[in-house]
Image 1 (cartoon, rainbow, N blue to C red):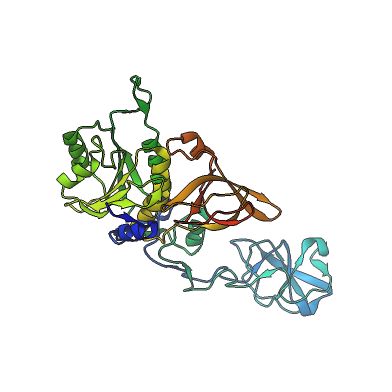
Image 2: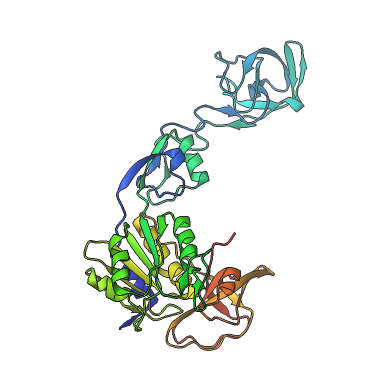
Length: 396
């Protein structure tokens, strides 16, 4: 098998992924989905000059002075008339400023006496929100490719949108393989372990905007693996385990029985070398992840997450930062190494501490880690305090 560099492997995978068709959803159901269209404003916001405070709408040229009160403007119930010389209108936060007024005197600075109010000197524009101060009519507020979060949802709603066009969420089937795997709360045999990889991947995939289903684990039987792959209803099948070439690793052979066209056979990465990717004869994509949890999780970050973003028409969510190593790092070997690590912030700098034991079977280490520290192929040793590349992980 030819080992591909991580960047090359990811590029080959993404070359096989096209954004899924768009669908129109009510705004309330679009959270987490990726826009397939630009969202533009249909009018100015605010659509009128508005008061930023409770107080009095005045003409700044009439201040200081005692003004005659001619009416009231409240949010949703503006004063219909205009403001003339020596006049004032009682006004409340968010209400439309009447024609002729150019400033607001806050109520604490004014003194009312019956139908008159005495105001201090006021400058034009004081405590006034100008029409279109937030955004203008026809202004593009959100771009295709942006994911709808609560704040963007609020912006679309303020633009008058009740529904938006978003890419369909990809459907992902997750299949664990191996005689040693059992699902909780089942009683494991003497040589079995609980399935920890597939449940975590299920949560990851859903957090990354896809619809996911975790299928029953499949024993080490070629016909059973073929049947599981054949029956999976998904855009993308993600297998966990059985990705290598040992006597009990049957996933590749099962894929080949269903016409798998291999695009990535193996990756020069640690952990995760057996990772593969291809296209089945019926067009479904298949990503094979190693069975060890750390290997599966690292490769999910490196490959699965960008694949799901591409299905949704979103940019690849792969952004590393620079951090300062808190301990010396040995020179790296020929494979790109992604080490589970912990970030700390001290003296305005981001520091990173890799865990001492990087065994790919350790779930406890990944549960504690909040970053992956990248060591490029053949990277020289790094002294404590040296700068390294880090991929932060989304942790609560």
